[in-house]
Length: 351
Image 1 (cartoon, helix red, strand yellow):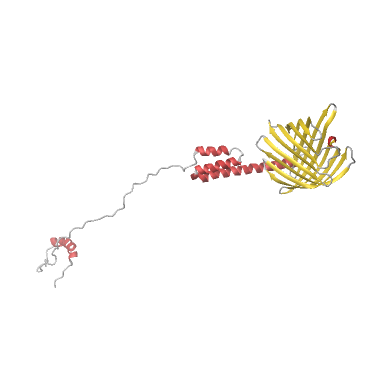
Image 2 (cartoon, rainbow, N blue to C red):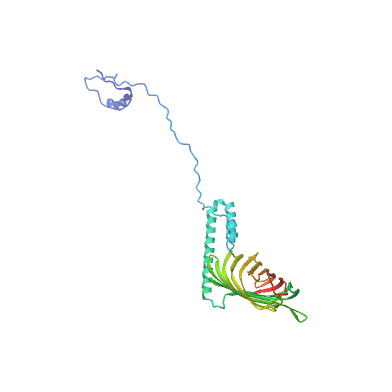
């Protein structure tokens, strides 16, 4: 039985066998079966397909620095942060983030550095102030002012005169001391028509979170209003309701005792309650408005006073002052009016 190959294996077999038959003679006496090595028809060629991805042009690489905040915006921020106006810096930072939101982290970093610097400066100032207060003597750290001018009086007298005043204040860590003095004097045809003086001393001791205790000793002289001398002693509790760089407001209340030497009546001692309000407001760097009001309330006589003042700075130490003083007694001395007012204009020197 003849051996036959599959057609798919014929071509390699023939290719490999041809050299052998070409070089060697067939063995003698043995015939070659040519049907076995018959060549099939040539295998038709098949097309070759190669699948490649779509060619994409490479993106050129450029070595560039990281984007930074534009120079004009940075200059604006740095200029605003040179001063100490926190509100102005906050407004500039808010605007910069709005127009340059891509650099908000860098802007906020600059703002944080500014706040840290300001906090360190304020802490250093506070510590230096504490050291200065602790090392100062009793006659040091006083600040005050002296004023001199003219006044217009209404009430028990109606005339023009000369007015003067003095105020000194010493602020410590816990203690505050205030001394106040005023004088109004006028003569007409060698007759004294106004002769009014006031001297007061008030210490305050801070307790906690704006609360303080106070004492007050006051001396008054006003013969035209019916008393030669009036001494007042009081003390009590106070509260600082507002305390900022531009505005202060404090209230006080406590018992009081008043000893009065009348001109035409016997001396007497009155016990009363004292309430007072002290307000100051810096409208801007040159103008200041202040209001001091007090009331002594008792069964014999009530005394209400109010001093409103407007100051305008001309130089660092020199100011112009307009003031209006109102005083009302519910039971004044015999032969005197209940209400007196003094309108004054003066020049103030601060020290």
